[in-house]
Image (cartoon, rainbow, N blue to C red):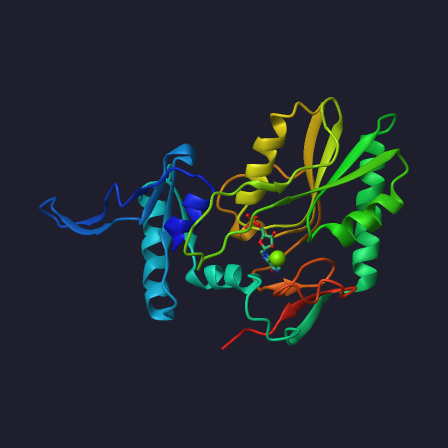
Length: 272
Ligand code: IMP
Ligand code: MG
């Protein structure tokens, strides 16, 4: 399953290419070793994928901690199976209606205030310039609308859409731009406006794709940044909120295409 996600994002990977000795017997033989599941050569990064079972997760977390202390230069990330389930949550299929809300994380007033602060910062940073707000459909629409209204610099608006990872797709596809921007971005100061940057794979893909269209500059501006779950490094210039792990809806973010239109950001009740 994780391999399919990596394939979707066209990331090179190897399965269990290396074992790391963690503890040794007094005679020098290896007592305990750890073999991370995946290695991503491009990022020199190991990824350990956990199961859903908490006891196994606890054991793996211990091994990962040990590996980090014995090999401080080795980069390793844990990918929780639970997170994969979250990815499935925003698939289009089988709509069960609006998700039950656990609690409001950021109120409409919080959002309004933060977006205003971000607009101020952007207006200063781009003073004397024109900016192109390029929204990633559909999660960014509400955020982009509010942000653009609060800017004090000339702004153009355009949108694009990318394909989405579908874990159950029988014919897996590669990530691609399904709806390109209407206008060229060559020579422009582009702000790539996103609802959320999570694993960072989509953001990285888009930055790479759009750089080829020769904008004068391009930076990411996201409403939500869940940096704790980042898999690959992404440079995020503007972010309104740092987001904790639980799945959220509202202000453009959906659960099976519903709840985007909530004026606040809310945590969805854990499923099952
Ligand atoms: P990523 O950064 O490549 O993982 O892409 C982020 C995508 O995951 C977004 O475009 C959302 O569609 C989806 N996503 C991740 N977390 C959430 C969430 O908490 N609520 C709604 N959608 C989410
Ligand atoms: Mg979504």
